[in-house]
Image (cartoon, helix red, strand yellow):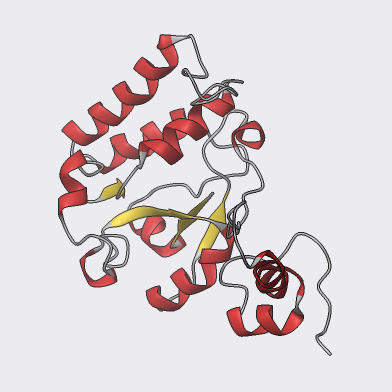
Length: 204
């Protein structure tokens, strides 16, 4: 994930631009500077993404490898993360959890696109479409640290699979191979779902 922002919005609110080594503490300080201004730090923080990222920053995971239990034992990480989110929501610096009952996903309703929130979030391949919808130059930075490099991972843009009992395994394999290996498929997709992590070939 990336932090996405409009430098002009931060400057207009006297907020220093994030550096490559900025932290959650810096994020909190930005919030203190916004109190009473009616400006959000960010819009939504989906726990399956942001809490999972926070856990990885500290060498833990959301789920254990066996899928039968949680991947962390330190409840302090849970308390720290959700305590921060609760405080930010109470200060109206981020949305309350009922954001998901609204149509916030539409650009004309999203405070970020209206210049009323400092940050949006997304994966690298989403940046171009975000910038196009925003209509003005945007900048990216890493997610808040510390240890942001440990919290991130290379995520496939798409997941393909075929049923083990499929009666058309050969055709399914060709279909998947087209999306993963064929240059024409990726030209059609325009990289919107990310580029394959291995070389693609021109169909022939």
